[in-house]
Amino acid sequence: MAQTISLRVNTDLNELAKVLDWYEKLNHDAMSKIDWWRCKTALAEVFTNAVRHAHKNMPQEMPIDLEATLTENTLEMKVFDFGAGFDLSGKLSDFDDVDINALGGRGLDLISQIVDVFSYERVAGDRNCMLMIKHYSPVP
Image 1 (spheres, rainbow, N blue to C red):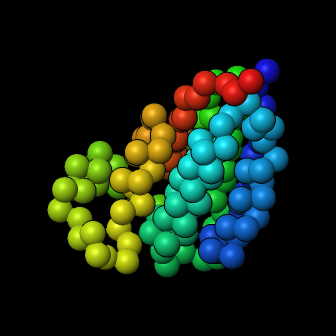
Image 2 (tube, one colour):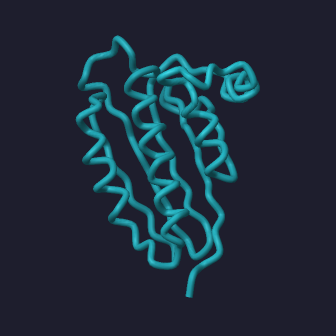
């Protein structure tokens, strides 16, 4: 049976703790711990990117909406922002040129390695949606 949860937070890096606590509300017993932690890492990376990049120079009250659906073999996470948007596939294709000693700039590549489906598109309401889907085999 699918479980869906949602959350709205402000554009504030201090909201990350609330986002991660919210993620833990999913009944994830059937998912391996390693997949669960990797997806939690991906969610944290997407949220912080929304705050730092998509909502850069926007008021702290600008909302970021999150939605997660867990089924018996998939975890789908969506993060909605009001930023200008960007070309995710173009950014991912540029990772051959990333400085491995840089302090940042590798989060999107990390996320693409963790999840099976990774996309970013404009949706209704002048928002963008970062979609991540992880397929998993249930643990007994």
